[in-house]
Image (cartoon, rainbow, N blue to C red; front, top):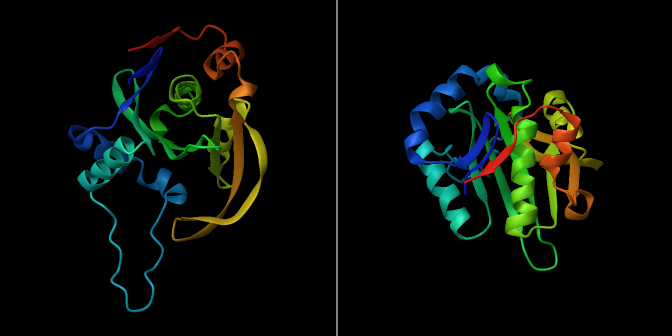
Length: 204
């Protein structure tokens, strides 16, 4: 599935994205480092866990997608790779939920790219995949990322102490959430109402 709205698009991540993905990550190393997930130290006597290569990452994401536990996308802006968005932790049964993580190229930050990408992903999760609830967990210090979900009307639900290993330590995260009943007309449509003049949506 590819989703698009104006200049912003989501599509599945591919092995052949490696060069563009590495280039964007290299340029944004200092911008992304404070918010990147890291691997905690191994227990005493255990071998150290190595960070996966790009190819290993993509293969893992694809395997999780095929198992129905994840939706891994790259974000494109004006046809160029500009970030990544992953719907992970998809749970079915009586919960029907997932959580979204994302990052964006600093060169396009502030242009509405990530709010649009998140809105596209949420609508796809609610309307096509059949999920009921989406969470986004963000470090309190990450003001730009918090601004994304606040613009979209996610509810702040509270603090999860030492929730994820980020930038070398266990970090507190704020929980933001949205359920399908809160956006009966779609999140993207609501985002458009707050951002008049945004181009229309297409689904391919």
